[in-house]
Image 1 (tube, one colour):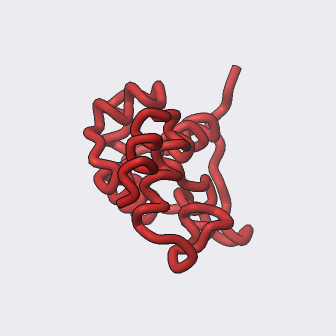
Image 2 (cartoon, one colour; image 1 turned 30 degrees about the horizontal axis):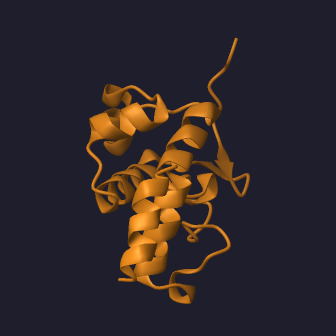
Length: 121
């Protein structure tokens, strides 16, 4: 039986859904995904995605991991523990084109990644 986990930031306060919700929605929209498409991609119910984007409810650790993986971002970023969305790759270190290729690869879309590479945009 899985239990919901309340994540603590710096051991002083519980994570608020506001930051997480804003980041979840922002990255979903950046990838031009609907809530339904993200639900299909991650296995997380669309109504829960809507709730989380609106700071309602507390997702389980497995749900947070699935959403972060689906969006190509770190769980730490999604939880508001870090400002580095992509982990070791910083925003200034790669171009938008490179980020698109990496995002396509992280989402398992090899065809889109190959098309981007071949187009050289």
